Amino acid sequence: METQKILTSSEAEVERRWWVTVPKVELHAHLNGSVRDSTLLELARRLGEKGRIAFSDVEHVILKGDRSCREVFKLFDLIHVLTTDHKTVTRITKEVIEDFASENVVYLELRTTPKRNDSIGMSKRSYMEAVINGLSSVTEVDIDFTPHSTDHHDPASSWNSIAVNNVDHQGSGRKKIYVRLLLSIDRRETAEAAMETVKLALEMRGLGVVGIDLSGNPSVGEWSTYLAALQFAREQGLYVTLHCGECL
Ligand SMILES: CNc1ncnc2c1ncn2[C@@H]1O[C@H](COP(=O)(O)O)[C@@H](O)[C@H]1O
Image (cartoon, rainbow, N blue to C red; front, side):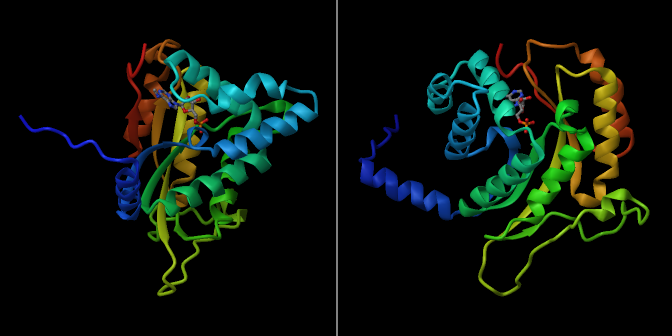
């Protein structure tokens, strides 16, 4: 039987650094699941100062290591309270891309749930505009997030008013990351909201949207609610990814 060598901490650190240098493809990143702890703590502290949350109650929740499935979805609810405004969505998108690139991810499929929040004038569309603004504002690395083919480009689309900026300093020796997007349907959503997300994804194909994701707490909702939207997505040529029974 093969025995596994136990690494000393300095050997483990050498190995970790080596893995960072390896070019990688990341196919399963959730935007709000990839936010820096330091950013979450900063946002929580700010909301605490405004009296909207008790910072001391959430600090340990953010920093906790191992989490049960229930705790994971509770944490997502907290993260959404902290991040769901246009400015912060733009900020976290930029940071998440730069973090993946710094770990030598060269191709990233980033998924996120377009969210509607009438109290702050947020629609699913304006949420996604904030994401695109985040991609456009990446400065630390070169980024390619719009396919160069114009197959799905509609010159009359209102998305044209968004400043889309593929930054590419060819030959500069800078890191480069290709980013494509998936729009997620949360299992708490209605059939109508799911369909709205699919239609938004179709409009955004020229902006690097390649698919639809069904995610959210697996103990919530019925498959039949999303079926029509997912079938429509497939008929229209979008890829579909499903979370299924990862934890119960
Ligand atoms: C066992 N792992 C998982 N199973 C199911 N859904 C998950 C998940 N991990 C993340 N999400 C989904 O992604 C959202 C956070 O990112 P966005 O707000 O979309 O950017 C979570 O609220 C959940 O709906």
